[in-house]
Structures are given as C-alpha cells and as structure tokens.
Image (cartoon, rainbow, N blue to C red; front, side, top):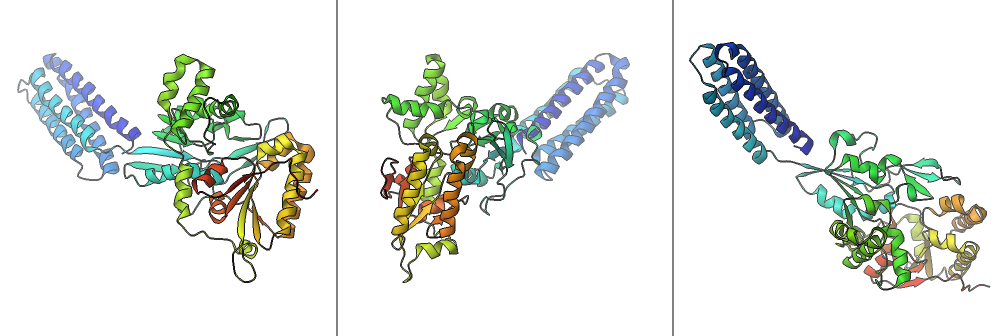
Length: 453
C-alpha cells in the first residue's frame, strides 16, 4: 500500500476513536443517550466494513488487519445488542472493550501493512538518462517501491528569451525502460515520496527550459523529497584555486542545488567545492544545511559507462562502412566533441577550427574514423545567442553529412560512441571524465592551432 493510501487507514482508525468517544458520552447519559449511542455504533461498524474492503482491495483477501476489524465489528454488535436489551452496560465497560479492539487494529495496521514508496524519475533529454539510470534500476528491483520514469517536455528559447518550440523525447529511451506519459500522472493525487531530477536550471537557462510545471520550487509541492543528480560530471577541482572555484560556483548556485532536499554529486571533493561556493553566497551560518543535504557518493554516469564497457555495442550499418577498412580490419575511432560554451566564447575561431579538424581527418580517413558528436543544443544556442554564425555552422553540418567520410552522431545514446571509440578529441567537457574512467587517451583542442592554413 502506498503512503497516501495508508493515511486513509490512519484516518479511519482516528474516526473509530471519535465515534466511540461519542458512544461513551451518550452511554453516560443513561436512557436518554441510548438511541444516539446505537447510531454511533452502527456508523462505526459500517466504517469498519468499508476499511476492511479497502484493505482487501489493496493488500489481498485474508489480511491480518481485516481479521481485527471483523473482531471490532463483532464487539460493536454485541454492545449494540446489550444496550438495546437494557442489560445495564456501563460506559467504562464499553470503552474498555472497544478501545482494546481499536488498539489491536492500529497495531496490526502499522505492523502488517507494507508501505510502498513511490519514486519518480523526471529526465528531460534521453541522452542524459545515464545520470539517473543506475538509481532507477535499484528502485525498480526493490519490491517495496513503485517506480515511474516520466520524461518531461522542454522548450527552446527564442531570441527574446520566450519559450518557443516544445520537445518531448519519451520515445527515445531504451526498450527496458518503461515510460509513463507526463500528462497522465497525477502528481498531486499520488504525492510521490521521492522525485529525482537531473536538470537544475529552471528559468535560468537562456537556451532551453523544461516545462515550468517541473521547476524545482513547484515540484517541491508534490513530494516529500526532491533529489537532484547532475546530468554532467566535472573535472575534480582544486579547492584553493580561485579560477577553478569560480567555474564550480556557476554549477553550485542553481535552483536544482538550492531548492532540492538532497543533491548527489560525483565525489566527496566535489561536494566540498559546492559547499564552499554555497557558503560564500549564503553565509557561514548556512554551512550545516549544505553539508547535510549534499552527498558526494558518486555519479550514476560512472556506474553506467563502466557497466557498458563490458557489453557488446550495436553499431549501425552506416557507421560500419566508415569504421572498417576494405580488408575488414577496424580503423581507430576518434570521438570528436564540440561544445556549446566553446562555440559561444570563440565564435568564428571555432568555426574555422571545426573546418580545420575535418580537413585533417578527411586526409587520414583510410586509417582513422572520425565520430563527430556535437552538443545537441549548439544550433538552438546559436539561434538564440549568436545568430550571425548559425547558417555557417549549419552548412558545415550539412557538408559533413553529405560527404559521408565521417560519422555524425546525433542519437540519444552518447555512451555507445564513448565505448566504441579509441580516443577523445575536442572541447573541455564532462565527457572527458568518462574517458578518464575508461583510461582512454584524451586531447583537448586549441582554436589557436590550425593545421591546414
């Protein structure tokens, strides 16, 4: 039985106590109170029957608590008969018998009814599901938990910051993940015990926004515990380096961190970095709060990538044509990552760098396969913030796809690309931390260095 359902059980038991208190009071009035006492007894008996039916519907027939309710009904009937036959039943005698039954019902309900937790996972982009998957799997395998994966919609912002086109990726999750439609789940009625999120930005993201219903301050109304796990992992910080800590500050001071009841980070060191940033913002008196609610127990992204490392990956046929040489031997695969921040900061320099990289890898395509996986929000970011270079970027994408000598990966499964590739090249990114876990070579690109000029 879920917690909300058990509250109904507790409400029934409290009602029994109130009705029976009415019985005692009426019996103390002697003959004038007999009629009213009988009404209270009859109502209590009917409510006991209703509760028994409810428990059997949710917990199955023959439940132990129902047997105590049946005994309660029998005692109520006996007292009802004794009152009407004028056997001189005292209020104290009735009270002793009735309260014993109610106490037994109460004890059995709290002992014999299993309370099932309701745990909700609210991913927004399918490619970021790996930040929640291992936690969901533990919930899925717990027989005392009802788990729901509810992908939520998100919007791209227009140049004025308004919510523009809506996206929903509920059909892009692995087959083994059962998905619930966000429009069909009654958040208020169910009131989940826990809600997990991986997007911390609420209204503070200038490029995209999850649906405002799913902003952290609103979600807190519908759950006992809101838990935030970042969809990214960061380079472990030097707590004494001001530049590095300023970078962490931007991640720590987000609504998802500030308003959630618990935050789960990639390491204990990252926890201390977040705490340091939050104390800087909110004062030393807030330290105990952040120390308590932020946990540095590890990122589920690491769990998933290490698990996938041991599993064969399904490679699309069109990729195989690029990956394998005519003699059937496999080329080295380089994962090329271009990020949002880099292109925002470098603009035209980054455009030139991407073209230069392609020229180099195109010349070496017989020995090396380039797997380009640009950040999925680059186009939306450029459209919103740097429209001057949007068309040029789109032309690069179009030409790269048309030439067909390299792989263009815009699928929801980033981990497949990481597993099958032999090395990382590109912008600084949380993906780098995953390559470190897999002990694969990493090289960060420099826009100042062009090979084909």
